[in-house]
Length: 418
Image (cartoon, rainbow, N blue to C red; front, top):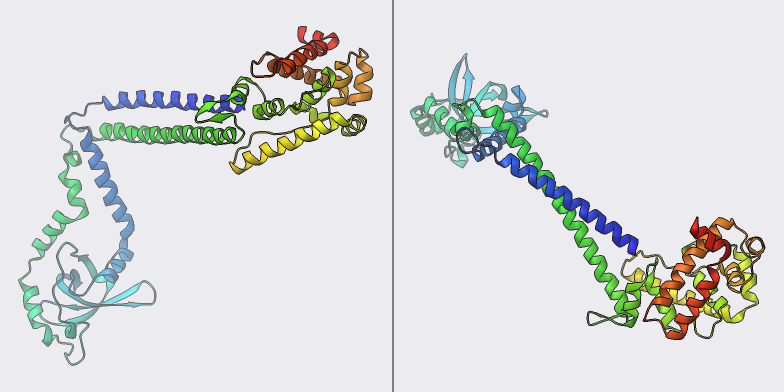
């Protein structure tokens, strides 16, 4: 409907204005100049800091961090352990998980001995250093090798040649904190990190908001366009559009203001108003008005029982509405399609020239006269739209124009002048 199109267009215009405002604010933020001349550097620093923090949270804190690290360690991994009060380098030969998070591991020490230790004695695991090769038959202190590590002497000799200081330095250089320390922002010589960090945070927030608004705008535009294409399919089905051009039906549909313009146009082109008197045409046209559902149904049935021709035309109009509704339903369109005869008795009597307004309201309507007056104004508007359209047959247009003048009199006319 026209109102639905207006609402969609209004939403699009609101989103476009919001996007323009955010783009202006973003351009203003991007004009910030960092003391070092490279504002993008603080963005890289923030990402590196987030990675370090994420890794720290994943590993946890305290003893639980050490236990989990040991469980993840593979055979041959180097570790620094506390041994009789002093740190000692060791090679992990195997890990044994006991009772949930508790863990023990077999370790080869530099003097060649193999011991079983608790995970809590691990000070550091050297993840940046590749694990040493441990023969498969020597892993986990294989049977026949003894607890003195005689079969691991070559590993012990290799372990003795390693420098703990070099291993620690390599860990620093290749660890998650190494990238952080390599960025100048980590020790900003201008002391501008807090300000740059704040500006970048605002920039990220605004960029995210702008992206969300742009996606929302594209979604609304896309939905509006897809709905338009589905409407075109319905119009093509009823011959209102052919090869991308409006036919006579289509031009009438485009010129109308109604809840379902296609239903009104089809009722005209299928000859539902042919061979009707002015009062009958006005009564049939009133069934196309949404407010007509508020009329008294019993009065409408009694009225139609006495007028078989009008009853047949209303039945044809109802069948046409059902056909259009089914075509729209198949294409997931929610445009209202309704035919209601609630106003027909009152409109017929008023359009026939009767002047007893109160009698018409009480005997032929049964509701509040204000509702009937509003319906009459809507009816007059629809009659005039059809009468003035060049696509409507001349005889039908002349008939509808004449009955519109008849309806627009007395209290109905006076209500429009208030």
